[in-house]
Amino acid sequence: MSVLGLGAMGSALAAALIEAGHPTTVWNRSPGKADGLVAQGAAAAATARDAVLNGQVVIACLLDHASVHEVLDPLTDELAGRVLINVTTTTPAQARQSAAWADRAGTAYLDGGIMAVPHMIGRPESSILYSGSAEVFHEYKPLLDLWGTSTYFGEDAGLASLYDLALLSGMYVMFAGFLHGAAMVAPAGITATEFAAAAAPWLTAMTGGFHGFAQVVDGGDYTVPGQQSLEFSDLTDIVTASADQGVSTEVIDVVQRLIQRQIDAGRGKEGFARIFESIRHPA
Image (cartoon, rainbow, N blue to C red; front, side):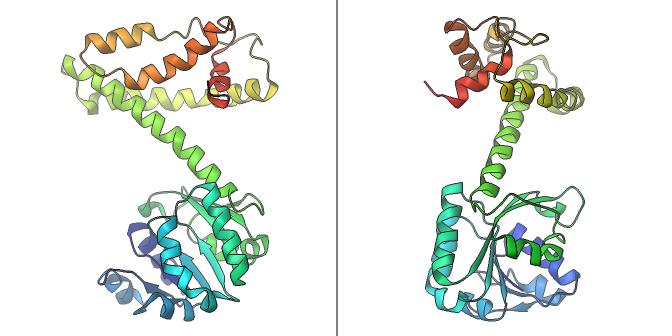
């Protein structure tokens, strides 16, 4: 195995391979980052070409899509007949471009989206999403499972990235909502730590609503009984209270605009899930 890119995540992936007894070659653009892995039993390659030549399976965990191709474009001949597992964060379109590029190079390609932070690698809560070559996924699944739960989404190389970024969007919006709340209470002398103690169980409980929202969205009927209406969901009080506390209303304004678009369209009696239509079909 060869791992290209030894940032925090690449180093964690390589360390898991070494711990499991896989001969592992590592390479990083800047020197020094391989030292700890070498002490654990890895072989350090002087160049990316040397790393590729030393492994049938090449794992790319680099900064971005451009970095992957800056490193690998000159090595298409060396990659021919090998397996490339690219777990660099990219867009779905970029993942598909890389898959097409790998196909032209005669390289079997699997794209991955890592739903974990480095210290989670190898632990049960780590999840890694894959798409691209089914043959590669199934042949190397025991290796992939060293890093976390492996889930395969099909031959379309862009699907793992799509799921990855969609899940991250939910995470970042949730984090922004928490930080907005912490900013609201701060002028009252409430610390972010105190607020987190109240916010964590509340937000955890609210995730139970995802399934209900999903059923409504998939059914396409936002009038089914039991939903909180868009009119009732109006966030004016939150916007006003935020402004009164002297904090930015930007985070809440986004959601309020999505709600208001549907109310203005005469849908105010329908369920909150209808903001899906505001997002799915931008004005």
